[in-house]
Length: 468
Image (cartoon, rainbow, N blue to C red; front, side, top):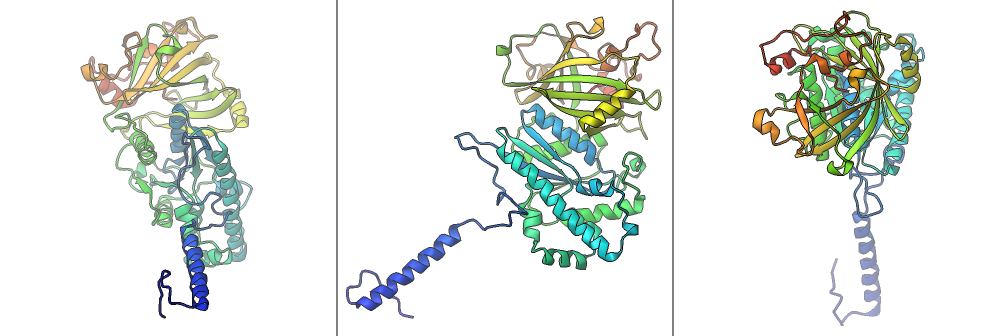
């Protein structure tokens, strides 16, 4: 085909019109190339993975993560830790419940289903999951704050429980594709490796009503759920190469790195929790930007003398989140493990019936702030409380620093009296006791360590350090 320059004057009118028409077609084709690819609104109500922006000049982020992995990998506790961490930074956090658990808790057993029923159930499960997630995604889009959306498993997890042939048939029948389901729908995938793979001594089915898998099956499901997400551009595997506490810190660190939040040294493996007694509360104007929360703690009756159970209600402007924490004694020499579970208001009210009358309810105002890339929580104890808590102010942080290096990171505007890390007189468990410390048998004492070594005591995990 012969191409002619537009400036050529030796062309007839017919050629000029045809050339002009061809240029219009090419222009439209080029404009279409520049348009973003349209996606199914059912799968992705906001195409692409760019973080959402407000209408103004300031930027707002909506970040969607999936917590996945085999049974007993730490997803429940990890969700709770992520939620608390980002709420303390002022983010709005939405937690999308696991759709499979919701449906299976209604009496469904795969062993009772025919092949056709099982296929249809999985198909409806995915449809339900997509709709539930989209509801939270739209809420995140309309939020005025930065928003983290934590999905307890994602759409691709369903492929771990169905044959490849049936999965491809289901994808084709619903016009789904892996690019939309896996790559474009979520910003980051975090696979928490099952305890059945590398931490077998800690694998249990006791804390999950819908879990019945043995170690071998759990290990197999762990591999399958990981394989389902291979190909996602931001896929992080959080394995069992460290103890559980460090595993949770690595989870938070992985999200912070992708979002672009500078966490300093708070989540290093050598980082430890530190607690300080503060004399007085300065004026609000002395603080850097902060978030204040009302916090209420209730200790519950526990199953054994070495097991602690408590409820925490934490909120702003009469909007609350609820956490149930169980702290168990050392297992196989590893640090004492805390299992944290997010609760509904109804579950919280039901568990309140198990309050331990040996303890006062603890009321605090918690102020969270960042300074020198160091994250701090300042707990101001409030009445009603035991007289020993009157006027008490405690500052907490995680750090690997000590001595003069630590002093350089501490808030200069606070009048810090002394460090009280590991001091039983400042344990929330002991502070809440109704009886006098000299007569009660419930008073907690730290495990013996090297004299004067708070670090050695902290590493045992038996110091009652109330982290929520």
